[in-house]
Image 1: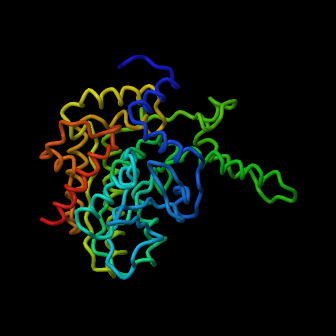
Image 2 (image 1 turned 180 degrees about the vertical axis):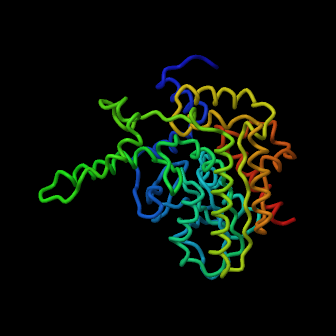
Image 3 (image 1 turned 90 degrees about the vertical axis):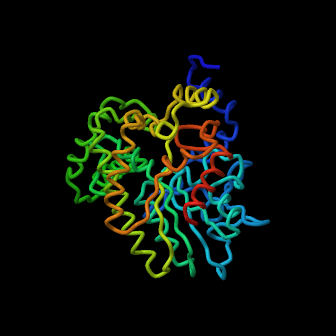
Length: 362
């Protein structure tokens, strides 16, 4: 039942409506596992009723009567890979058996590895594969089921943007790395001058407002971002990374397909009462990622992104499908299939697997 909640009450309401989300929150917020190149990835060997990871941090896929992952699949058989962010990972599924990768394995009888990286943008998705490319001998399909993370993160304020783009932990990275610059200048026999002054000025307005606050409580919104420019940047980033995918996968002679993942407000005419109740509770306890959605929820943004992507990817000969459109034919669209704006429940994930499988087979 809708009501005005405190932050703690709202979190408890989310857990009441979607109990499995507590496992995902613990998975995400137990601390960040920092890594070179990709910046961060999931914790290794994480165990819970809802989500489990292997020795590398990849989520398991149910394949026949066992579970496989990037560190434990049959290399003598061809493999398929589904790539993306937290929706590909399967946030919201009640167990590893109900991710898209597991659904595709069930439908095809083939190995599908889950290359979902929670919080990853398109560039990090490519780099993650690059780090593990040597594990694969024969690849049949690489499905990029992605797009919304990149669009969301392109809403990060301009002051935190870099020549390498915008990314999860943009503020945190700058904040904590600047501490090293301070340490460098204060060490004995330093050669450092005040080279960090320009960096400080970039986000001075953020830091000055919260000198006594925990940086982890920093609030970020997309209020200052021009939406049309944001959509164009997103299209450029996605199309550029897909060209990198095309190059990386050339030796495998496999099929590369990009599916723009669905967003609830883009593909549904109206939410179910259950979805509406969940979304209301989430909005009472938003994190920065959800705050960055405020200016992209409108349906009018959807065709702007799709049309630009379609034009760019057609030119490069990369197969592109919009699942916001494909799901319109699903009889489940009127059911409760979302646990938040972009993540599904078990039923929704299997429906996505069926849509992807049918599209690949056509």
